[in-house]
Length: 410
Ligand code: ADP
Image (cartoon, rainbow, N blue to C red; front, top):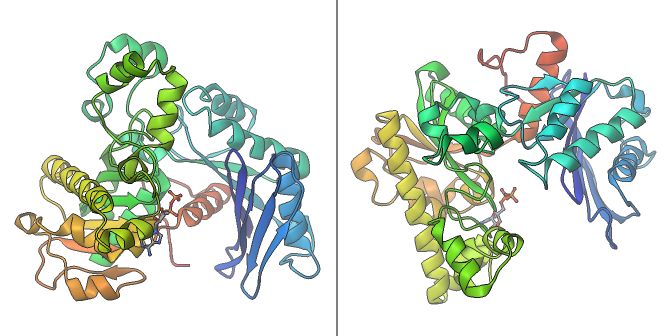
């Protein structure tokens, strides 16, 4: 079966085409700056990589361009579009309506649309992708895989805020959590590395990329996570503040006369490590400049790792001990210094990092000391693979999101 995984953002479309019969990734790529000047596509196959300028005013144009590349005589990997058996979409917000992946029909489309007010920047482009496929490949089944679904197992004690209950009842104000497919994937992999049934595991996964979230996973189910009503909450991120006292918002509105949109922009786009350093979001730059003696970059690294340590402590408490801590995403997978700064000082929890293993690890690895009671894993995330697995299982009629039938052996 050939399955196309699509991630449609506001100005980009990322894609991967898998062949599940041969367990091969046939092609992947990204088309960026949709609707702006300078639109380009990066298209990669097993053997070659191309970057080309193109013209795309909307998602339909963009997906049409992706199709041209997939079937191109020179760059293509399939000869006809009808070789694509199904399309899986990453959908950011499923609210309380979706706790697992689903086959898309008109009811699902309307439901995703109805959740747009909870994710105004994400759900509309996700829907645009679904609509584009509907018109370009009308007979191909489409499946929605939600970022929030994995966290729907959180209990009300974890997902409700101590605010008037009416806000939840009337507007759905509660913690939803995000990066669900990533947390799901790495915790399933961790269970394999521990050689344990996922149902017998207690894990803390740290997804540290531009966006950062930490999740407590018990028996394969998310029981708490650091992102909240929106992805702004929790850990310090590249440009997002993470948790702050909500009164700061009101104070700044008073002081600077900000509109709600302006505060939103500052907290989402000009805060986090960018806010602290005033210059950098890329943790590689921050680590390099900190090493050269820059105090603000050093402070940004200290604050980011301190806050992650605190989240590990919180989740250690609610899980009642843990089997493993998992590092994933851009920073978690690539920055040994970030992993070390988070783990150092947590030895009293049984978390003992092995400095040599940590320095040399580049792919999936155990980076804890042999005698460490809690294992520390570096696990490259693979959200697309979760999409592919879900699409395949749904179409073959053996999808049961709680049974953990995933193979993840690609
Ligand atoms: P997102 O998907 O949230 O945009 P990624 O998971 O791709 O983010 O992570 C991007 C971040 O990963 C970048 O901000 C960069 O700082 C960080 N990163 C990538 N490689 C390294 C590295 N070798 N060392 C430190 N940080 C890295």
